Length: 507
Image 1: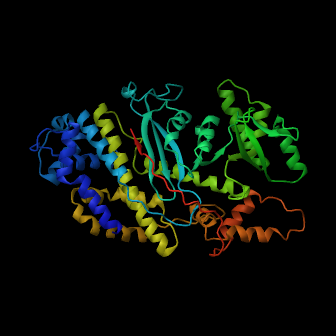
Image 2: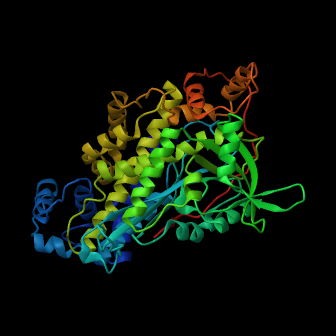
C-alpha cells in the first residue's frame, strides 16, 4: 500500500465522524450526538485558529464556522466550548496521530549501523503571565513569570517522533534525559547538546548497548590512565601547548569521565582558530561580568577547543567524522525555527487556560500532520531526483495552504488529489539550497551512507603527504565533504541487524 492510501486510511480511522464522536464522548467534549458544534466542526475551527501566526479572535472563528459550515454561533458560546474536555479531545487526537505515524526512510544506507539516530532538544518561550501557576517561568531579569518548554526527540533516519512533551519552562533538559532513559534501545545513536549532559545518563546509555555523541561539559573533569594504571586529570592548557608544538589541529584521547573510572570514552579534540577563541572568551566574559562572576583560566583554556565525547568504537567511526556527524543536531534547531517563524507556536496571546492550551496543542497536531506529509514526499523525491526538499520552504507552503490540510481531515477521500497538488507545489522552488563551503544534511548523508566510499577516497588522498600525516582540520574536512565524488563500492559501517520497538511518550 502506498503512502496516499495509508494516509487516507489513517485519517478515516482517526478523523472519521464515528471515531471523532467516540473520542469526544470519552474525553467529555460532548455527551450527545446532536451537539450544535459537532466534534468535526470543532476540530476544523481549532485547526483554523492554530494555522494562523496572528491571534484569531472568537468573532473571526464564529465567522469562519458560519461561512464554511453554515452554523451560527455566538462568541460567548464558542468560548464556552473551550473547556477541559476540549483540551483532552485535542490531546487524544494528537496521541493517535503520533502513535500511528507513517514512516519513510530517506536513504536506506544512511548510518546503517544504527537502528535509530535520535536528535533531541527543547524549545522554550514566554507566555501570558496569567498562566504562571500552570506553566511556571523563571521570573528572572528580562524573563516572564510564565513559560513553556517543549521537549522534542525524533529519529533523523525515518522522521519518527520518539518523545514529545510539554512542561513549564523550569523543567531542565538534564532531568528530562534521566526520566526518559527507559525509551533507549540497544544500537540507538543519541546526539545531544550540553543541556542534556550528565555522566550518569551517559553511563546508562552505554549500559543499554546504545551510543552517544556529545559535547564535553565545561565543568566535567576527564582523566587519562598512565602506564602505572593511575588516573591523571587532563590539563587543557598543556594539551594546547602540545598541539601547537606538534602543529596538530585535531587529536583523539582515550579518557575516563570521573575519577573512579565511571565511563571510558573517546575524547575528540578540535583546535579552534585564535579569532574564534577570542570571540568566545569575550562573550563569556561579558556574560559573567553582567552576572557578577569571573571567568576562570581553566574555562578559558577549554574554550580553545571543540571537545566531543563518544562511546562509538574508532573502527566504526573515525575521530575525523565524529565532529562532522554532530552537526546533524542542527536539524532539530531548524525544526524549532519553523515552529516559531512559520507556525507561531510562541506567539499565542492572552486568553483563558483551556482555550490557550487547546490551540497550543492543536498547533503541535498541525505541525505533526504537516511533518508526516513533508517527510514522505521528501523521501519519495530524494529516491527519484537524489536531492532534498527544503524543510523550511515546505513548512511555509503547508501553513500558507493549511486549508488543504483541514480539507483532508474533514474529507479523507480528498487525500489523493490534495497530496498530488502538494507534490506539484513542492517540485517548484522548494529544493534545499546549496550553500558554499557549508556542510548541510545532503553532504552529511553522502558521507555517512554505507554504499559510499567518500571516506576511503579521503584517506587515499592524505596518504601521499610529504610531511607526517596530521588529522584533517575543520576547513579541510568541510571542503572534502562538499567536493568529493560519490560512488557505490565499499561499506563504511558494520550492520548489526538489531531492531527494536520502543514506547512513545506524550504528556
